[in-house]
Image (tube, rainbow, N blue to C red; front, side):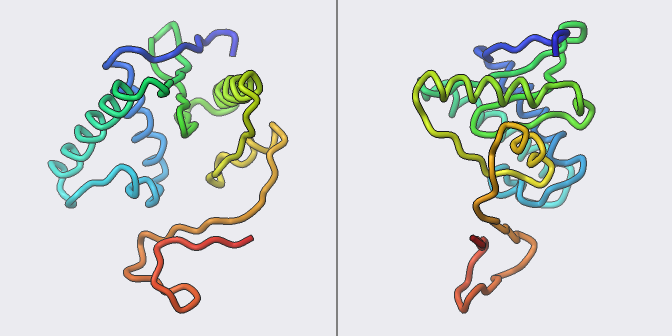
Length: 165
């Protein structure tokens, strides 16, 4: 990690780069749950481009209008490429594996929570679990999101999500 820079994102171009990274991270391989919070309305390339642009606008608006919002990024100083980011979600590019990017972002979050005396909890993807376990996190329940199903029924009720203790 010593060759990378961890810093706070403060300009509009930085959230745009964060959205670029998020879309790459959750589309290689594709995770359907990504569209729950980053919707694309349609199947054409133009629809995807419109969803991508709308996501960038939402990210900046949400960040700039909330004084409590802090985006932390890890940047490769040789290329200025964003390697990972954290706000409410930690995500890293697939090419960032085993370089300490996720560990650095996670450590920053743990340090901030410790300074403020806050408890930390995680909702993890399967890919993120090894990182969180490394920091002593434990599995309390499993949440399944099934956006590919139309009107799923769980325990006699229509639901898009399910939790298992």
